[in-house]
Amino acid sequence: MKKPIVAIVYDFDKTLCKEDMQNYSFIPALGMTPSEFWNEVSIFSDKTNVERILSYMYMMVDLAKKKGIKLTKEYLKSLGKDIKFFSGVSTWFKRINEYGASMGVNVEHYLVSSGTKEIIDGCAIANEFKAIYGCEFLFDENNEPVWPKLTINYTAKTQFIYRITKGVLDITDDNNVNKRIENKRVPYQNIVYLGDGMTDIPCMALVKESGGKSIAVYTPDSKDKARALYDENRVNFICRADYSSNSQLEKVLKLIINSVAISTELLTFENKLTEN
Picture (cartoon, rainbow, N blue to C red):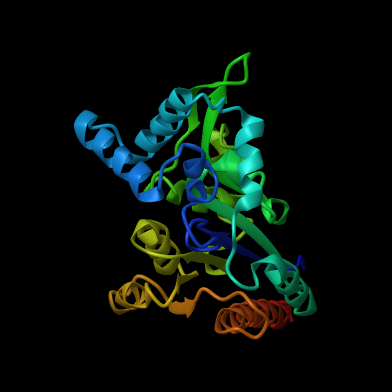
């Protein structure tokens, strides 16, 4: 029997890193504070009725042009190196992978973010993910952004849960992702979703209601928000955003991996009894 797969799906901003990814280098390069930039995004969105994710992408292009910054793919990727992660993130993936292997479970990591994929691609942990989904720009022959290639708002995130369960990771493959598949590559009960708050609720609810596990991570300033998600039955667990060895979050993930390993072993035993 094939080893079971546990797929851990992460939000990015304020889940793995401490702030919105644009706050670290991009916004300071504009000569603005994060609050000034995001306020401009809100003003533009309210004035034009453009959806907020599209609004921030437009404002990135518009303000960079006004500042004389060439917003190439390479420039955006270079910004990723300045992202600061929560404690333990740099070694988290190796530790969880090794624990999964010790339990006979393959662990896969996926990132689904409403942030800028080009920035994420340049961060220190980008190579830890089997797939990264984020908002992307389409670049012209001069390597300048001319159109959104992909936008992911909070409800659109849920489509990637379906893709992961079915193993259809190519975003241009709509036929296979819509096909009915009885034996999914990653069953819903083997999905774990990690997010930090309100914008993750659609994914949290989908995973939890489908038999998987949803976890809200929090900082001291956001614990009440996470607690509210638990009280409203949106998530299975709340944990401090600490990815260090022996942290509460690591202990919860290990227990989830244990449960998948045990369930698989029980199913194998049950099938053998049935065959006899």
